[in-house]
Image (cartoon, rainbow, N blue to C red; front, side, top):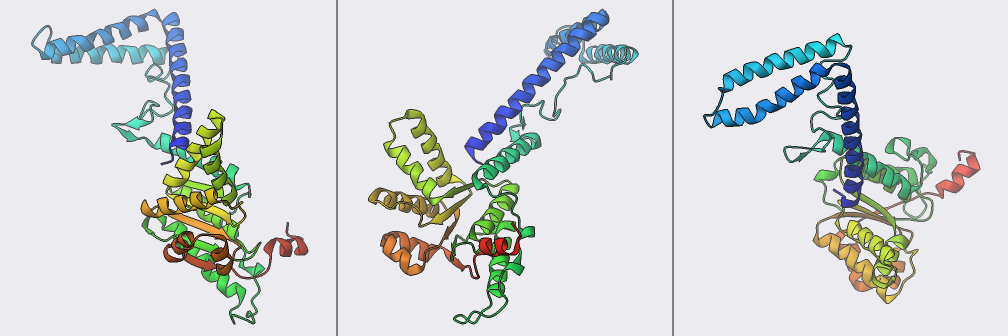
Length: 329
């Protein structure tokens, strides 16, 4: 799981727990003020706990006697609550999740309520990063691709993209069982970013940690971490670098648009290589051809991308321009 998002989920869970404690305190104050006998009953029930511990060591009343008294007190307590218009469980805690009492954990395991908050934080984080709307596999329109064979390849863009779509869909759906890294290659507006977003959302929905970042943003984080004189900026950049290096899926969009220097080449290699060594999966999209990549990047980077990534070639015409032409935007 992503540490940053888990911290957000835990903070929200803690706020819920504090609100539950305040509500519970208010309920007790109201109930004790209206029915003083309830306070006396609760005090007596609480006093039985140390007596039970003493009884287990052979001191005082037997456990059976204490259990019988406790049941009698609880029955009287429930009776008073109902008589005064409250549910029998009114003073048993105002927890949003009774299973974990809003701690987020049950016997050391993450509770489903905290997992839901984590999923919510991840969805919000992805939405802020993607800034694309609500792309999903269900809204991917193959009808926007030409069904006439390409004069060079002899394959219709629609047929090629149907294959690409199927690979992406299976990869996202069965992400936990997959090992592949992918390089999406093709011109502007062919659906690379769209399908990347679809993969990100589906994989995140399954509970895996996902980081979606542009190549420009990713390498800027490495520079900020290394060169920034502002402590907060450097810490923020370091956290992003850590997340990009360790998340279950990194989607690196628009490789080739970043400013290339010796430092950024080194940072890119470090990011790619670290994830390969850690067996973390990555999807990279680029407008660059194979020849352009060889000119732009070091042999080590090209070797990793060509040897460890499966290339998916995107075909067709600029979808954004086509949608605008058809009035679909």
